[in-house]
Image (cartoon, rainbow, N blue to C red; front, top):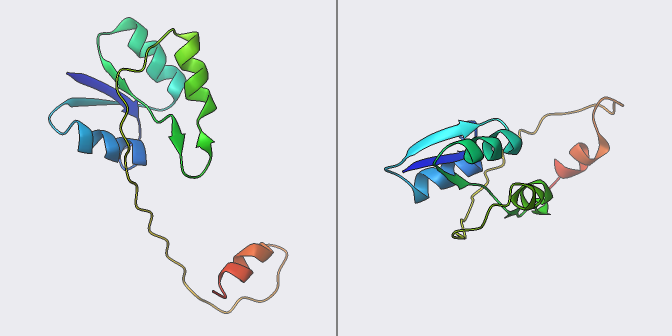
Amino acid sequence: MIVYCLGPAGTSSYDAALELFPKESLHLFKNFDALFNALTKNSATGFVPIENSLHGSIDEVLDLLIEFEMKIWKTFDVSITLWVLWIRKKYRKSPAIPRHWLIAGSF
């Protein structure tokens, strides 16, 4: 099976596709439009996120599902772990450094 997903390698979509389709051939696309256009021309399975924890529903994907008359074949609940690193340095007050960065650094 050929699986189309959003790239580049290392993104959450790519990592989830590798986890769910470890033995399949993954083809990466720069954007959802290119992925959906390729699906209409080739025999492949598309793997796209329909929602995420940061923005909720991904409206662009939902719109493309309607526009290209695609059907959802299967859904997966994929857990994504985010690692955040904060390096503490002494910052002077500067308009170039957003205030919320300075506040976040104090936690």
